[in-house]
Amino acid sequence: MDKDEIKNEIVAEETPVETADKAEEYLNNWKRERADFINYKKDESRRMEEFARFANEDLVLEMMELVDDLEIVAKEVPGVGLEHVSKKFSELFKKYGVERINMEGQFNPALHEAVETEKEGTKMVEVRAGYTMHGKVIRPARVKLTK
Image (cartoon, rainbow, N blue to C red; front, side, top):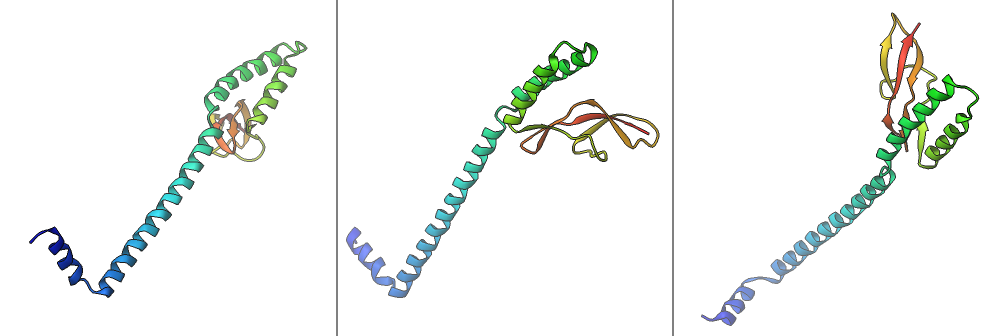
């Protein structure tokens, strides 16, 4: 038997129903693969957007150290004018979705890091400012819990 005879024999063995079933199976498989690919593209798009939103996170964290130092100096030596520079940093942070963690309310371990606690401490005193970036905590606020 040569190739043409084998092909004719294979094709002759399949009934029209079997051929339609195979065609439907191939079509369904193609549709599933297409849906998986579309979902993959959406997931990748979301990942890239997330990456772009937090691409500057390391730089912002380093800048926070400068802001901390400026605030310490401004408290120690009033009247030097560092409040203006600190305000500029705050505006810059806000532009990139960075916000200072609010110290009002109760202690929240997702937002605050307790570094010192007095007996039955309920009031929080900020030791170091904490920040969120687009709603994600990038540096928790260090607090001291007092009566």
